[in-house]
Amino acid sequence: MTTSKSKYRASFTAGALLLSEFRSIAHLIGCEDLVDQLNKEVQENSYLRLKTELARARVVTEMKRRLKFTPSEYWNGFSSWNEQEQKLFLFYLIMNAHPLVKDLQFEAVVQRWKMLITDISKQDLQLRLQEIESWDDEVSSWSDSTKTKVLTQMIRILTEAGLLQKGRLTKPLIYNDDFWKQFIQWDAAWFLEAC
Image (cartoon, rainbow, N blue to C red):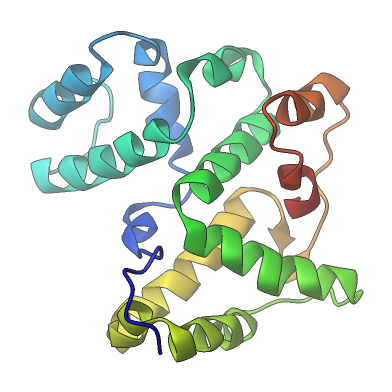
């Protein structure tokens, strides 16, 4: 096993796509004081409408992490995109912010797709997670509960993104070429393969 600091985190288990949460604060993205506004939201609950301050703090922390990995100009079309496009964009955000999600997507999900195997389960993802554990001390040290949350949340992310339906992998039905072209413009052509 390696002793270097792991690039993998389980913090994405705070929420899957967070579609309604990002929709509720989309008008704030691009504001110079976005971080201050989000911190204020933890206290005031003006937009997120989450029951507890603890839940808001956890979700806001995750939202800030995802936003940090994506320039604000990427959000220009968010409000005009249809729901499926918004979901895929949020999937892109998760993969940008969380190397583990990107790894599971490419090394487990996409690999199965390439072998024409369209069903996927937590057990299939677990095989990849076990491979990572074999060389990553931090992932190896996670509790069984954390590992289960990671796998469950990955299945939920795929489902919410429209890439998994009833345990079967599907391709997104987005016919808007401009939506896909922007990922190429953002030097993120890899995302097209991920979907």
